[in-house]
Image 1 (cartoon, rainbow, N blue to C red):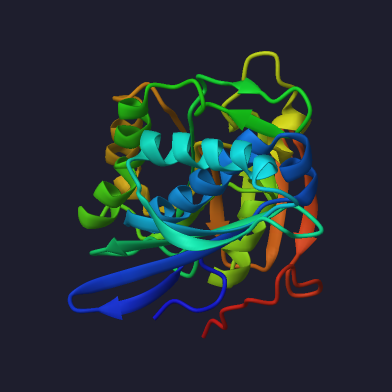
Image 2: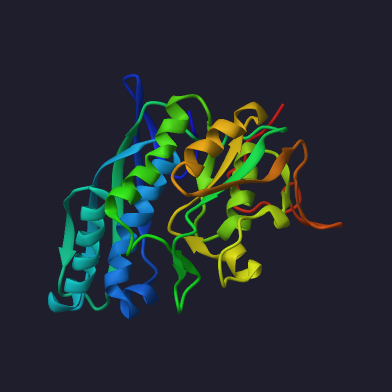
Length: 285
């Protein structure tokens, strides 16, 4: 079964899996933009469930604040996201007399078949799936294609992921998170035990967003999938049919190195055999 390093813990249950995940919000975001922090607490957990081929069931939260009044914006952000993603908040713990403000959210989901971080194989095509219909946050490295989007569209776009798993089109991948595209690729490669070549010129561009910023930002809808070559076209079609971008940006290699390419130039960005990233490593052979 999947080990540490996946987007969720996958717990065998009957013919499928229960998925369990949790996220803590960055303190500066909780302080500066509590509504947005509340929204993100739900959104990132929902994304983790879908990234593993699952569907969310419910969330709980732990909210500490210096007063009940100061917690209202956090609660309103969580409520708005829970309604948008149709995931109920069913409980948790609240402290309105804390010396600081903090938020963490946990989620339960279920999957029939898994997309995991451990299944990338040499020869796989790496696909980057994103929603270009958003804008960069003015203060933080976050591509926001969620808070102003139609909720039905949000849910139907995410439903592609369990469809991929259940149809046997994809069994390896991760959601693109705070490590950005490059960091997410490294995490996927480390847990799978391989290297890769990434073609920076193939990464779907965003309007008015420099490549350097795009490579390191956290998209509200972004997934890096490792797909067998013969299944690339049907995978892409599911995203393209919903006006989402899904492009081949690299290939998994039987090495320990992540190579970045652009034009005729290439650079060895990271060698996982010499410098582990997380330490969650799969041993091949």
